[in-house]
Image (cartoon, rainbow, N blue to C red; front, top):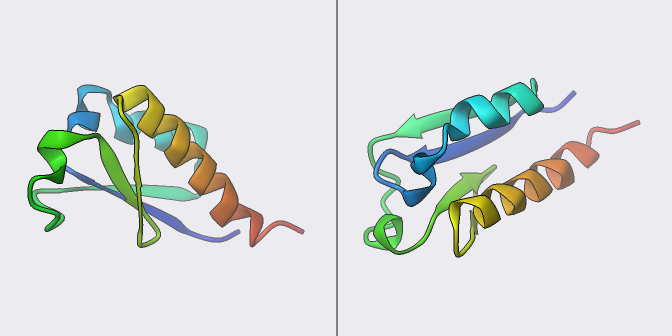
Length: 82
């Protein structure tokens, strides 16, 4: 199985949810890394987002962002499917 890394900035709006526990419980092969800063200055305050294997994924609400993150994780894991 492949490894997927989801990076989240501590100051991001998506941290209103326990994104780390949600993702890691649904996808054991995914690592969620909480960072102090992801160097996308200003984006954290504007909309919830995460970086999934190097690609920015964002939504208008934390819930929408989480759904898009799940979709991106599924796309990344599909590469390793039999």
